[in-house]
Image (cartoon, rainbow, N blue to C red; front, top):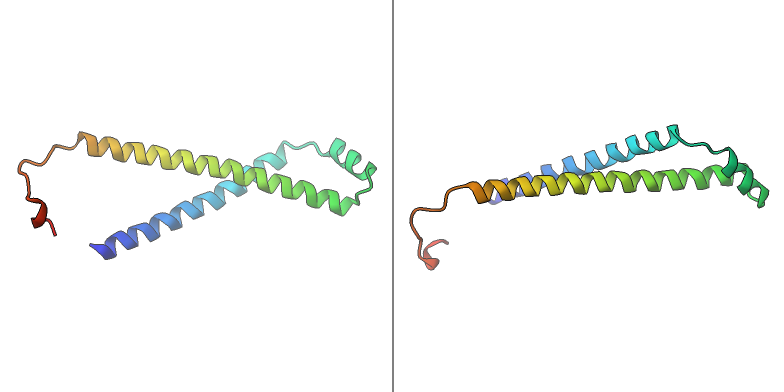
Length: 105
């Protein structure tokens, strides 16, 4: 039973990490698609930054926001799964007989 719990935890972690990274990429692509960088580039280059520095700053900001959006989606999905599991446990029937505390292990 311990092996199954460990394996299920490893698979769940792998699925969560993969969906988090895929969600971050999708959110980043969505953010980049709707971005209008003309004013930001003009303002930042006017303050003395080079074009490469401006591109790096904007890329870092978009990556951070994409990761934040993906994190929010991952936590929302986790909350829904936990609430569904709690509902399933709550709806399951109670045990019919009581086991003495020392006999369980």
